[in-house]
Image 1 (tube, rainbow, N blue to C red):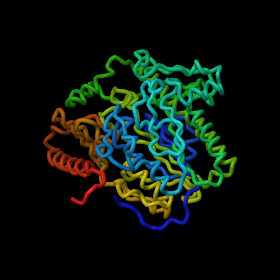
Image 2: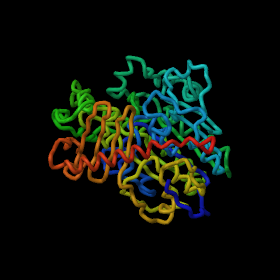
Image 3: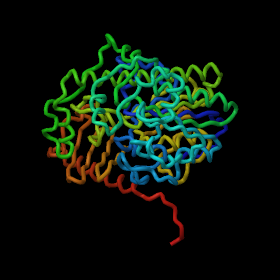
Image 4: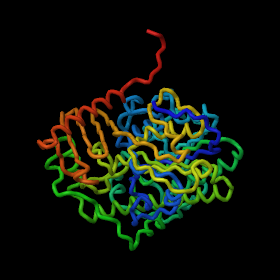
Length: 476
């Protein structure tokens, strides 16, 4: 692990790490999408450090979260697909690391280190993974959990309106295709609960060093934004998805099958889905705005390090598909990342355009807090660069791994995919197709040298990312 060693005299009193789910890089208006209604996120971006080429290490929720909240790659945590669980005694985790740095740690909302289907019927204790305060709510309206108990007590008249089918319920499919407006104030939403709980907690912890992880479920389907958020898109032009006719023709399995999954969707279906996702982001933005205003009113905003990130994006109709999965397109792999801390960074917007991995974030946050990252973490610590105002040097390439030998290596100019179960590979020329990723160059004679180089680089990254972090018990 690369890490800076400069002693830190100025450290944030509070660290609030906000994570969203299914949120793309271009779901923030300030990132160049004028259709988005995100004033709070635009504020953070306009006075913080923006990473424009940050990539997640897995294209689905659980392995991505277990990776960036441990500073390890998916192979090293043992969680490489949804449905697995991070071991209850796994170390290091974000909570262990910040506790060691002298912060009291609180988890509010979605963590998703464990499967959560039917969690309110599960009589076993939920693992807290080292958090001092643990208020989990993994979905919005599925379970009798912390959010729903709060909703029934605070806003009982809206409790039924926020109910949604469980993940395994066949009725969930319809709720994941088109938005259904909920006639309720955003304050009663899952996002509203996360921020209300965070503010009430912080009001009792003045003067202490606090780390909070705020896990928003938005904009993950089902698409049930409050009406105010959905109405914000009336009269706005949500861009149509970008796709090529029969894009699967030059793709090997299993990618070709993924690209054929939505052939029954119409242009109106894709538009409704994209609008619903946008509205879910805006609902979350309402809540983040309330958090920012509360911190400002309490005089806490300048000395709070606010981090905003996502576990992965959503295809949202681009390439003719939706949701997430190991197609590895940038729409899912490239995620928003913003850090704002006026007392440490100043208030001037800064833009980092080099390649970064989400696995670098936890070591960097610890570095900003004056704590050496756990020696087992493999991510890069770029805290010195961020504090000094230097532009951090990006990585030469970024790596991602999904279960059963599905992997991605991306440089500034090329992206290489390997589907080991099928013995197939894909190569995109990002210089020829900026942001396109539609033509597979793997079978083109012109790209034989590039293909060989990318294949070798992926092998090297995969081997290094598979190194065990389990400590030795005996010096054999």
